Length: 273
Image (cartoon, rainbow, N blue to C red; front, side):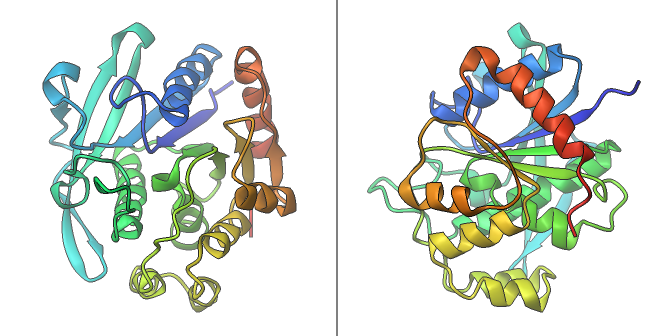
C-alpha cells in the first residue's frame, strides 16, 4: 500500500526559531508521523532570525528562480533546505528578502503586526504549492500551522483545485492560542482579486476583521485540529460553530496515533466543493 503523503506547512519550526507552541508542535509531529509510516514534506518561511550557517541551510537551485506576482508586483522565490539530523527530517524554506528579512516574525519591535502580513502569507502559501509541484509530489493532506499558513485553504479550494497535484488534497488547519491579528490590510480583497480569486470570495472578504477573515477561511477548510488546549475566545467560538471535521486537543503522548487516524478520516471524506 502506498504511503499517505502529509505536507506540513508551518509558520515556525524548532530548532530554527525560538521555542513556541507552534514551533515545538511542528518539530515533534512531522518526525513522529513519519516514523508512523507516512511520507512527509515540511515547509516554513526563511525568516532573518534563522541562522543559516548554524543550521547549514543551502539554496536548492533547481527549485529556485521563479517569480511570484503579489498585488501586481514580482517577487523572486528562493528555496533553501536544511536537515534536522536527530529527527532525520528535511525542511524546505521559502525565502524572499523583501517579505522575510526582518528581525521579528509577525510584528515590529513595538509589537504591531506588519502591514503586509497578508502579502507575506500569500507569497508563502503560493511558494509552497509551486515548489511542491516542482517536486512532483501530490499530498493527500496539507496540514497548516500558524497565521502565515492560514490562507492555504483558500488557495487549494479556489485557485489550485483543478491542478492534478492538489485536486484531491485535503486541508487541515491547526489552531493555537495565539494573538489576534486585527491589522489586515483594507486592500486585502483587492489583492485576492488580482491573484485570481472569484467574486464570491472577494465579497466574503470585504470585512477584513479577524473574526470574518477566519470565519471565511474555516468555510473552505476540510478539517480543524487544536494544537493547544485553549484558544482565544473569538477563535474558540468560530471553532465551535464550524461544521467541518474537527479534532479536539489530545495529550502529547497520544497525538501521533490520534492525528494519524484523523488524517485517514479526513482523506476518506468527500472532496470539498
